[in-house]
Amino acid sequence: MPEGPIHNSPYSDLDDATLAVVAVDDLEAFGELVRRHQDFVYGAALRVVRNTTLAQDIAQEAFVRAHRGLPNFKGDAQVRSWLYRIATNLALNSVQRRKEYPSETLPEPPAPSGPERQTELHALRAALEDAIATLPENQRVPLVMREYGGLSYQEIADETGLPLNTVRTRILRARRALRSKLEDWR
Amino acid sequence: MSMPVHEMLDALLSQLDADDAAVADHTPGPAPLALIYEGELEADLTEPVIRQIRFDQFVREVVSLGADIAVRMGSAAVEYSVGRDDPAASVDSPDDDDSSTQRSDTEE
Image 1: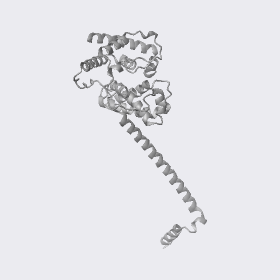
Image 2: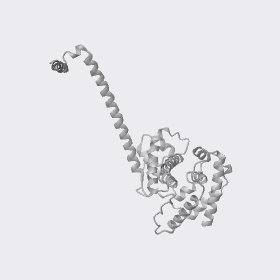
Image 3: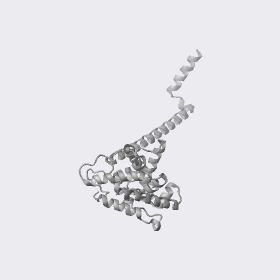
Image 4: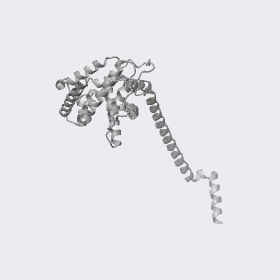
């Protein structure tokens, strides 16, 4: 979440599920939902489209659509994974519209200045991007859904249309490959 | 976000090592990658999102109002037409004078 002014929102104590109910008729409450999850939703889009400007547009559109869909949100899924699915579907549609899989690498984030932690984090993210990019797509998609989106195996199976056991197998293989690459990097 | 980077990496590697065979199908994952990528967004989307939602609501209200006006105009037109067909209603209608004038013009 971007750093900014501290929001003394009257909704900050509410959990996501309650907030989602209140936000149907209350834009301030919905704003709290956006503040909580915008960084995560943006990241979900960015992992797919690999373009920061486009990812920001998609994140914005995902929240607008989520607001429209709030009355139908049953609360049987986590708000976070629901938002994740909206954002990744929009991102995948955007990629398909462009008729190409984004092969460009993510733009270099601004060079870290100062704290050593920022330098390390920058290096870890770059290594991760490289490692994930080398995975075959049929492993990368379920892996990112699980390890970034936090979706359950069942949700991933529903989203991808793959059998549950296939999802588990592909994620297991992707994990092994990713682990090996990160161990080499370490 | 204050967790040291090596702890993030450890958490990720530990997750990658995990044997999920016994994890229930509906259990959400811990999402260690989300932790590593936290803080990527440099802007605050709250304002533009709320602005867009308000604009959408405004457009919907305008469309709804336009439809309402169209319906009322349609009803008024039907009512007016019915009035014109009624001989009793046309006695004092100034329009009829105009039309009779037009008719006589045509006859000439």
